[in-house]
Length: 203
Image (cartoon, rainbow, N blue to C red; front, side, top):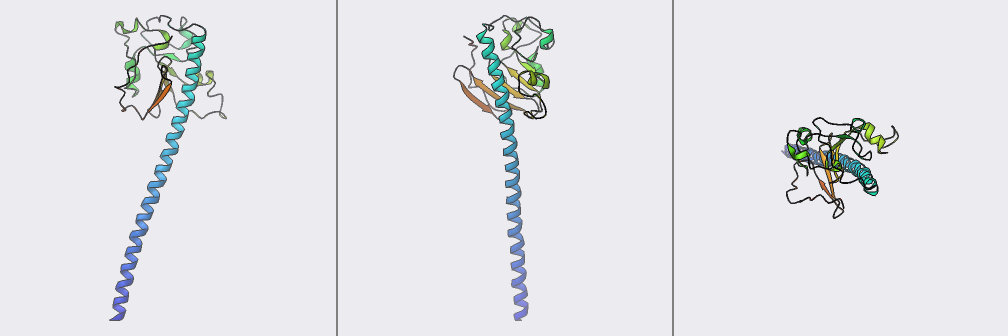
């Protein structure tokens, strides 16, 4: 009788031990996944900050040359710098003709709206357009010079006037209000920016 009780107690202890180990294993796995995600998010945010720094530098350079507020020529197709002869050379990237293009990339909450099929482009300055930066553009901006430099892998959509940076690969968005010099980090494109009222002020 005593032996049967011992076996029963031993079995209960074994079951409890297994349950505790399973709980501990689950916690460890979840913690590991969270840590990996945190590292990835930090890397993405760091890269956004680097790209934004380069954009602000170009914007400041343009401003120092009195190159702001130049009336932009209306375009119907995206224009890379080489074929966009009238635009300031400090605005690196491919000028995007229609914000529908960037919405198709998942960039839905942008601050500037314009269309290639309406008159909304006619009042835009060159710096108010969105520009797509590819790997060559990043190199031109001094961000990516080779394999030993920053390992920025994806293309970006930027707006020199608003300070918006959109990571097309990771669907992450970063925006700085130049007037207040306050960065606002938005997690993905579902974040609300309804309360952010942007007025073009390049003075």
